[in-house]
Length: 199
Image (cartoon, rainbow, N blue to C red; front, side):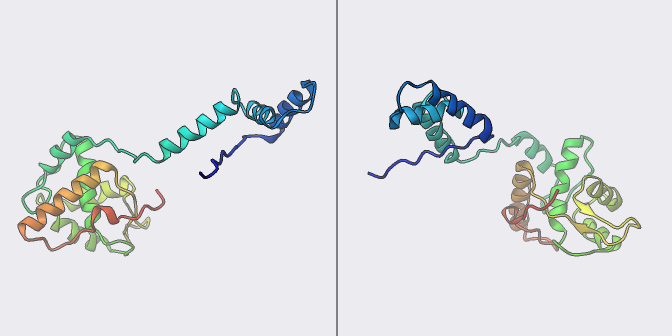
């Protein structure tokens, strides 16, 4: 049977050393191995070594659990209804949360790490929506920090961000819809391939 390793991390060594020295000075005889482990654990803020060991084992159990992200499925469904059968945005929604979520598939349709003129961005956005207002989409993408641009309005570039869980779900559903409909001119990157970048 392999020996269990119990790491010990203290925030500040000075109060730890003072607490340990106080306990050793109060003991009438040199502490045994177990007594010393209890002293060290108490100096680190635990009740005793058993408490330290139990806390470490609990931390390991929690670290091994898969991280579950809560998805607002109703928001995803309502946003999905804003897109047509081939994944184009039919109208600019009135609700802000739906507007913001609608922008992620448009962001995904922009090429990564590529400088684009305003005209190029407008052309790509026109391909992805039906209400002929690329300016509102372009400006909102910029105001939400999803694209960058020069102060003079030139050289747009998609920022490499990690989409929220709802956005990843929406992008995946729209890609499935596009495939079922035979595809579109623009081919967004798969939702699981986005590289998180500086936000």
